[in-house]
Image (cartoon, rainbow, N blue to C red):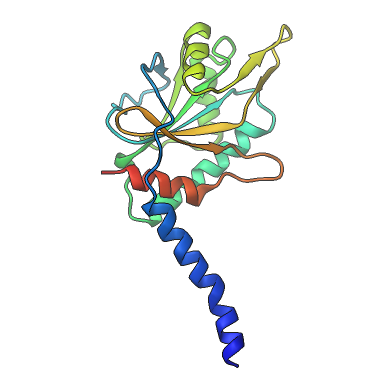
Amino acid sequence: MKKSIILLMLPIVFWILYAMWSKAVELPQIGKVPEWPFTEVGENKTNFQGKPKLVTFFFTKCPDVCPTTMWDLTALQEVMEDRGISQDKYFIIAITVDPEYDTEDKIVQYKKLFNIEDPNWLFFRGTEESTKAFSNYLNFYYDKNEDGFVTHSTSMYIVDDKDSIRAQHNMATRKNKVAIEEIANHLQQLIK
């Protein structure tokens, strides 16, 4: 009987230790974002500086990774709310990697498709050149071929209030969802 109780308690103890450890470990500084050369799409003109951010990339014609990631990030908003963290404490920033095709109107329609109306979820659009330069700050790879097909890596980034890159996470793929709890832990750790 004692043995079965101990075996039942072990996963709980390990989960508690993991949760405490992931919040206590200082996130490394793995890079810097020197500038944000974008225009925010839509009517949300909130100043996102001085707060932690999850930065992700997308394009509206993406058939798999981008839409799945958007759905998972809506769940992130719920997790943060459940933890008592209001949306004015952090941002989700989505940057199009296909600004030639992704006009402001197309991005607004994309936001509507996912029911994204949160004031802390910003969609950015820049020029081809500024987007490529920005992606290089983060070591994010993408390419658009002559037929207009875009391929990209599947990383997202936690950026702190001083624009230092502090963590890297994976977007949703066919086999894996976004690590929402881990991202929430990282954002929570950086919120002052």
